[in-house]
Image (cartoon, rainbow, N blue to C red):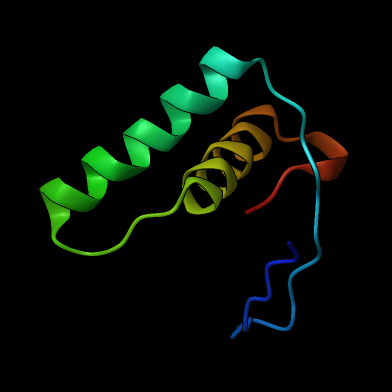
Length: 66
């Protein structure tokens, strides 16, 4: 069954990452925990985007983000 989502941010591209099952489940659970703690919906995608951005900033160099 295909899942259709309406995307608000047209400036984003799809990036598929294959994770070990335990890591994927932990990420999904963390998203649920953050949603419960903050009272706003936090997605696994949002967490992954934050982690990748933090990594790029920390590493700096040619592809670092300010």
